[in-house]
Amino acid sequence: MSDRGRLVYSTGLGSICPGCGWPDKDCKCSSQRAASDVIPKRIVAKLRMEKKGRGGKTVTVVDGLPNNAAFLKDLCAELKRACGTGGAVDEGLIELQGDLRDRVRHVLAGKGFVVKG
Image (cartoon, rainbow, N blue to C red; front, side, top):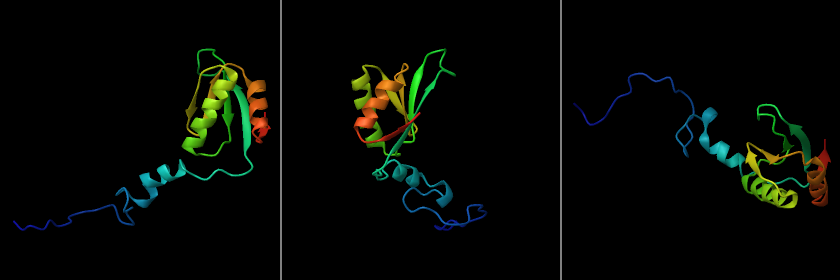
């Protein structure tokens, strides 16, 4: 046998990402880049209350925020501290335990965000 292997069959035609080795359309590097996007000057935050799928528990959801992991983590910590409740960051939105829309609206407006809902 020779030292060189030979390609027998391949369906992976096209461009491969040099960073992660995945095809360009499924590149894992792009999902990491999206977590560090720049923060726009005008942020429109959307507030809503959800109960569905949580065993009847009420959750305040802040959506429409920039997809920046560090920004979301810091904002979530500030909102939890201001409201005195627990919460988490989940896929580009912030979830806070309880119906806290009025308090959250006041804190976000104080930071200069446009708040809807």
